[in-house]
Image (cartoon, rainbow, N blue to C red; front, side):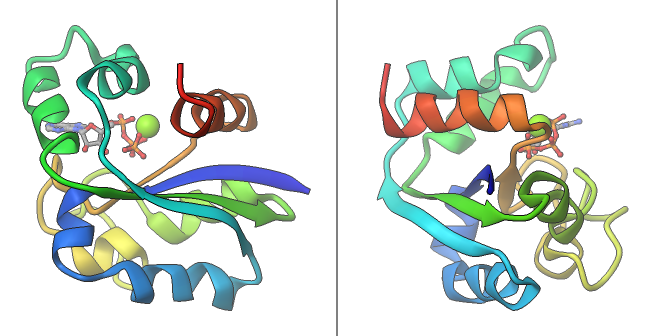
Length: 134
Ligand code: ATP
Ligand code: MG
């Protein structure tokens, strides 16, 4: 079965949304294969968001992701990557429809509650980065 890397970001953990968010994946029919509360190092944050290194918000993004613990998960099931992305919704919560996680729980394009892998290849890369360390 396919695996997706999913991470409830520090704002989601601070706001005590872990249970509600995990529940949505389980209700959809996906399952939690692994989960860990962890602090993300700057090195891992910079690698994870390496494709955004040239953006003006890159420094803020790394500060945000390292600002407190995240809840990192492997979510498993048929079409896990696409199904997770559709439950999460678009990057900007203001554009995310109600019923999606970002649409229901976020207001800020940077502090947008949750991350989900955007392809199966990136899922493999992210699972190795966060769980096997570097
Ligand atoms: P993620 O990779 O976190 O699942 P995404 O794939 O929807 O989100 P990306 O384009 O990969 O979006 O951006 C990664 C993260 O960078 C976003 O989730 C958000 O936290 C932050 N981000 C993206 N665009 C902006 C922006 N214009 N201003 C501030 N932060 C942004
Ligand atoms: Mg992304």
